[in-house]
Image 1 (cartoon, helix red, strand yellow):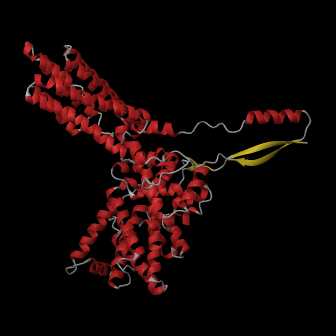
Image 2 (cartoon, rainbow, N blue to C red):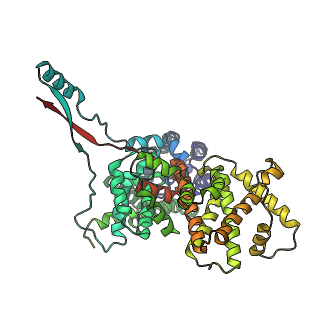
Image 3 (cartoon, rainbow, N blue to C red):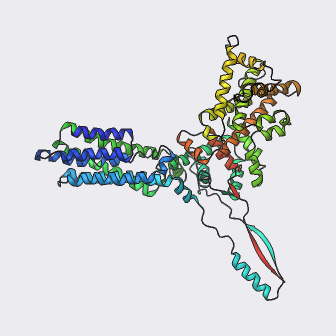
Amino acid sequence: MLVAGVSSMILINKRRVVEIFPATVSLGALSNLEGDVEDKSSELNNVLLAFWAPFLLLHLGGPDTITSYSQEDNELWLRHLLGLFVQFCVAFYIFLRSWKGKLLNILAIPIFVAGLIKYSERTCVLRSASSTHIRDSMLPRPDPGPNYAKFMDEFVLKKREGYNVSIRLGAEISKMISRSHPAAINNSIPDAANLHDAYYFFNTFKRLFADLILSFQDRRYSQSFFQNTSWEEAFKVIEIELGFMYDVLYTKAIVIYSRCGFLLRFISLSFTVSACIAFSLFVKHQYSVIDVIITFLLLVGGIILEIYAIIVLLSSDWTMLWLSQHKNPLADLIYLSISYKSRSASDIKACRQLCAHRGDQVLGEMDCFAKFGWSIEAEFDESILLWHIATDLCYYTDLNKNSISVKNTKCEACKLLSDYMLYLLVMCPFMLPDGIGQIRFQDSCAEARVFFQDKKPITNRIQASEKLLQVSTEILPSEVKGDRSKSVLFDACRLANSLQSLEREEQWQCEKKWGMISLVWVEMLCHAANQCRWNHHATQLRRGGELLTHVWLLMGHFGITEHFKISQGYARAELVVS
């Protein structure tokens, strides 16, 4: 019966079920098993049950690297708080019922303390990472601005005294943000400079993940830094910065990377190790082999989790950042494109215009909007499908003509961005503006299957591309088929033929054509990144992150975002008395 009760508890711990009901059932099973015994020989078993009970709290506290599996878990922190209260009360009830004053009863106390620390940490972190509390923690201090009432009192007083009073605006007073570097950086730590840069920007730009605004001073320094660094360094800083954000949202970083956290970690580990040593030296000979094995599994399991947490802690970016502060022993294309844009983001209006572009700016600058504008003015999901199919058709056609090399940088960048945007459309549609992209995708696939069924066997994509481009699109597909089917297959063929005609009719070089296509894709990517809600970006961090999130944060650093709302500093008004 003892083995059956503890087996259910171990199963629950193994599956990481943290809801109130299963955990309470486990504790209830221990309580029932304890109540089934009456003879004196079972007294030791009751004491052992009381020693096992607090391990549920210890293991449900979870590892430091996982507190929530989604943002919804953070929002349910009150449920976890209730679970902590209920489970502690039941475990404490079992402990009191079994109190016999024996050594094993006393050894259960440090396990209770360790379990309460672990589970309380988890509940505290869930609360801190909830959207309400994380937003409140990032709100700036209330700013009343210059004392208007006092200024006007002085203005009225001088006017009543008979003076001619006017107002002169003085120089702008700005609270400029200074970058707080340590006196010396320990360059023996890998990526020390990048860690400092990322942490500095993280403390400012984490407000984007709470849908808060940034000031123009924030933008000024960020633009200066990112416009004067290489794309490799820029994306490295972004990667570390998103890593910090992930830790805040989904791990115990808020608690453990502090003096209090280190103290709690020391207490938890030392109490568990002490209980394990004391049990092995003074108590284990009183119990059966199977009960001793189960007890050691619980003890050693808790110790291993603590040691693993310490190893992770010592190897994290947070620790490397701390060490670096002490003297103790596709991307280039995206970056460069977002950096031509950021220089024109001179004010809020310009930022909004840049955020709204989704390929039309590139086409306008290259005098191609009249020819291709129809493909950009369509719904965004339709534009993605049109340009994806057209990019594929142009890619394999040019590859067959030896017009391009497989290693051509711009061509490969187009292909990668095209495939990635289609992946978002099909697999992560919630990250794109609302639309019927999945319907268009499946209808286009269905029309492609019908088309190729009537053709001779096609062995490769080059042949498939040639067959599609041979279809005349002189009459618009919608005029022939109507709009019941949402397929864009032959509209994309029309777009591809137009792109290919640039070389024949406009005497464009193949390289220039692919340069334009690549810039259109970058604009589409930036538009999608800006339109995606902050909570969707945060959710994807838990799933490994997305290129779209990196681009979104990079755009924020360059000032290409609508979150910069504070465009003016303080202007000091002075009274001119004559």
